Image 1: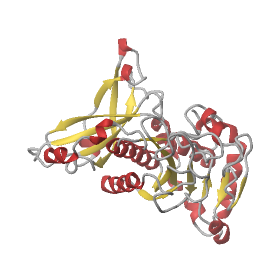
Image 2 (image 1 turned 90 degrees about the vertical axis):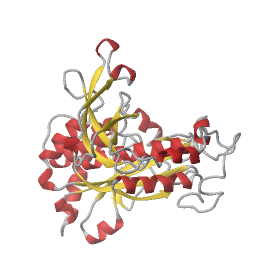
Image 3 (image 1 turned 180 degrees about the horizontal axis):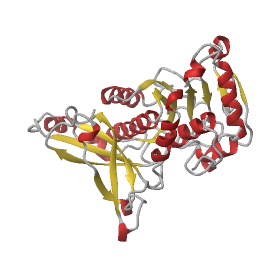
Length: 370
């Protein structure tokens, strides 16, 4: 049996008694932000006198950056700037979840605030109507770090029956997946679907299509909801790109991309042009496709387990071993989208979408920033 947190075993019926109490017309707003690791999420909650109707109704706030790897203790206050609002599936209406950008004491973006730069790029390319869909793979672990439902002192049967599998011996943790899906729908996250992945205890959800900056906003909130649902069940979701070494699939965040021109008749020409540009800047993109400049992806992009080698750029129709895949249907219809299979599961979607939009649509001399 997987190791689960003791807090998950608290009496939920008692909790529900309090959850059913009226709020006296007040509204709870939970502020969410990315911490100094570039991967971790933090949150805290405050009371507003009335339900906010738009993001403009949410006040700025602050937090102690020295406790989130984002500031020195001698100058620790950081600003939370609300950018996107969702319904709260845990405490229910009228309460809200609010995604925030982080600014330093001088009101410049924090080092792990990649949204600020991405937003500028998306504003420059807004006439191209660039759409993204991101496929977030993740792995469920016990609190001891061992994959959920794996034998305590060994391994499950080899990969084969688990992808989109059904049955207690094939699908581990479906309750969590279904609760997360419902939470996303309630919140207003643009979740597209979900499926069990190739490695047991590994799952995927897809977010999109989203236009421009909305992609990063919705994926980060979907990740927050996943971690929060897992907390209730007492297990952990990891975005590690290669959680288990050996003959097991890694975890990516495949990114599907299209522009208005690509979606229209004859769009394959623009898809091929974009892929050619991506190939010329392969090394730069690898550097921004995981938080450690390619180190994490190096464990995953080996040329095996449905990946291309990290040092090589390749593209092909229906080829899951390529860096960039053109779906078969797109090849036949001569229009649609392409899939960049290089981003790691723990990538920052703002960095990924910003780099893709910049490379494919802007004539830029500088490299994408990590």
